[in-house]
Length: 394
Image (tube, rainbow, N blue to C red; front, side, top):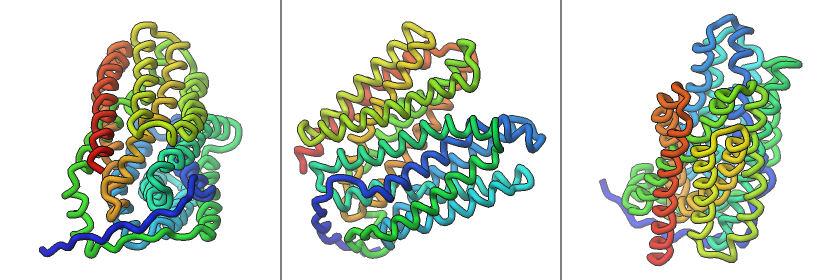
């Protein structure tokens, strides 16, 4: 196979924030993903199936969402970020609207897998869009806008889904993000597609990324980040249940993660242009470490609420650092590189959940959060050192 050296990436435009329709798309994708878990018990009762069976809905959705990342990233490098997002939103809307009329669990499961696969296009393509249109020194602030939308979507989803399923119908939970997806797809028609470098065949596109040493570094850190942050977040609600809280109360407290993300992304946007590229990672790692350490040594409702909030703060600072880095490692195949990082993040999330499952089943949440604190220290040091070396090399 013959490869060629890709042309230099086109100069980015002097934008400083993500377009509002793109933020709406990101909000909708996260809303749909986080709205499923709170209604699993209700769906099981309505369809007269065991709860263990309906849990497969969440698993199938997450698997399709994660595995779809490289497909959408490669496609966005070839046909355009916005074209991919609009198409995926339309497919997701179809799956969501059809889910409201699903007659049985098998049909609903198939439609949820389709929705997860389609919504998986939004985040990597949106990150790549920002990488294409925002200068590196402003990029982390623009990514913070997307993270604010994602945090708002995840936080509101838990509150909305439980209330709608209880007082109206669980089927409406699927209809709302479907309608929002159509609205976002329509709104994106007025947004200009950024310029992209043509990198030849798909094989050349993938090889270009595989030859970039820092692409491996960012992906490896994404696995650890997913395990430490997303995996740890999974255990906040079970820890609250273990303290005797109801599903509704545990969900409301866990939603503080979304609030923390929303609030602290504003701080990232203000600080990022004024500090070194690796500094936000150190700040975010400190927030996450403080949350896990407190939850490990002083378990209680208040410390778990603090942990949820600080995970949101840490996500805003630490994750945005890795996001911005991922958009810079291979500019000529940005969508492919970013999608590999996002896929690694979800692999890490699944790994962290699996590794902590045994201890949480025995109620040993202090152990889980203590280990997560130790991993956070190693992750933060690695991100700070790696990001500094990448900056010096550049």
